[in-house]
Length: 358
Ligand code: KG4
Ligand code: ZN
Image 1 (cartoon, rainbow, N blue to C red):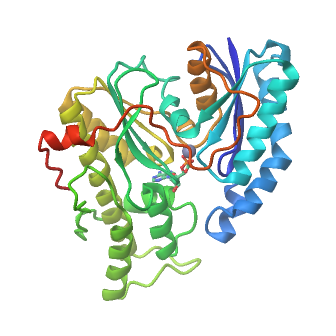
Image 2 (cartoon, rainbow, N blue to C red):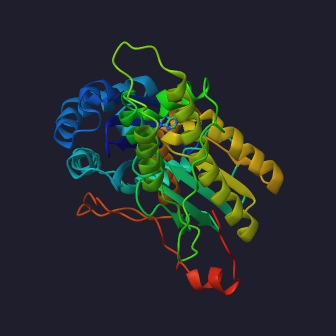
């Protein structure tokens, strides 16, 4: 079975052909990072216009790279949400038209579920129950997945996504966009224990995450210690590297600490860490250590599959196709689409009187 995946939820226009949900025949990704760089973040209007310009060529390239014609495609899977409305609409309209024209099934895929499936290509099959930390520029959630296709959000960020925090702190430090890779590079030259930022405490005791306080703490530190942002062309100062390292290690402690506490509670057989921030080697190392302590393997996607791509959308689409579900032609972009089809029995967690002190 061949699934054509299409992704345009944020600032990557991507298409991929995937066989049986596991084998990537082609994966083409056009990143808009360079276009958005001068603005220090994604500009939605520019993003959707660029998707519109690129999508036809990207899909054609994916077909050429895969060496197959449209008649060989068994289904079209497209990112339905969450994401930017203008961006999503381009992929959704394109995917719908293509599926309709070809007379093939259409599958609207939750972009976050796509990230969950990004690990299937390079890892052994997932053993359930699984626990997945999906951490990107737009989202930060931990899902309990008792069986394939069943999702319960067991932790979410109350404010900024982790990637967003990397991007905002990098901006404050004058480091450029996107912030994640720059902070990771500079952190290597810094001392992560130089500044002890405290971890967010969620007052209702739920194992949720929060990063906006940390961002404010970095700003406060800069103010109180007279740390000015880096000027263009200036060699990076040690104090900036120390700030980068201390910030990064706090984010990682928070993410991995929460993942580990939930894992102790839920005893997953597989841990999944995916999304753009999963590119971060220090996060990977910390998650690996947690996996070792917990006795559960940790599956990551390779870097190219960590950030937005269409292969993961095709893989998630294949799972839906295999279970017989597909979308109607009236399917449309859903900006706030949630990934949760199991009741979140918070009471369950509370009854056990688990204290999550972050
Ligand atoms: O998954 P993604 O490509 O897009 C969204 O769905 O949001 O993730 C992009 C995010 C950005 O915030 C970027 O700063 C972050 O992932 N990121 C990183 C690293 N590489 C990308 N964060 C930390 N360390 C990295 N090496
Ligand atoms: Zn994403």
